[in-house]
Length: 149
Image 1 (cartoon, one colour):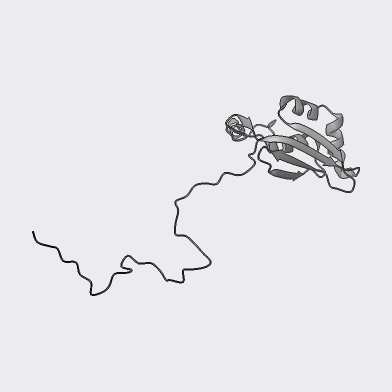
Image 2 (cartoon, one colour; image 1 turned 90 degrees about the vertical axis):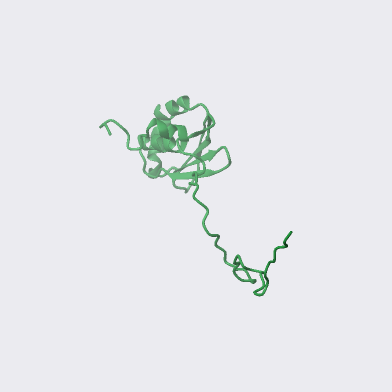
């Protein structure tokens, strides 16, 4: 990590995860803030050029800011499949808000699950017929005789 590199900066391979088949997953971002001092970073981001530059670099994302009284500042990311992720930006600086937006852009809506080998099934209700065994249904005195030709 170089001294000028952001703490949330991610390699290019992580950017590929933000796209599935060439489609960006993040569609909308809502930045909600209030008039309290905890929203000072949001006001700085709206007055400065960082938020505008982020919007110009990412035209696929719709960015909306909303003044909501008596709420802590937070960002809601809405993804293609309808999943929403919410992150707090309470007392965050302008740079940290851009890092949060970048983090939302670079993640998938749902985390992928690693496929594992299917083990024994687990159930709350075991079978009332009992455990199956290969010799089930075979009578003890039953024998097979082959015909001679």
